[in-house]
Image (cartoon, rainbow, N blue to C red; front, side, top):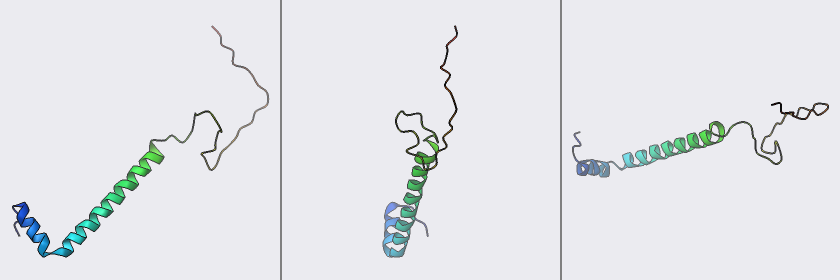
Length: 79
């Protein structure tokens, strides 16, 4: 099988319709894999596991550890 032109490749695929279905299925799997990888990267790697935003702290996390300490020592800037 020598597919030297696009026309020959198209004719070959038209004569073997099961290959078109297989290619569409594999393309769908590839797109789903890329989409999953992109979502993982956006959620896990690019978003840090901590937050420095002002507002309700820990609302976006399922498990939050709160450390309470007695007293308050204001920050004193020394020059």
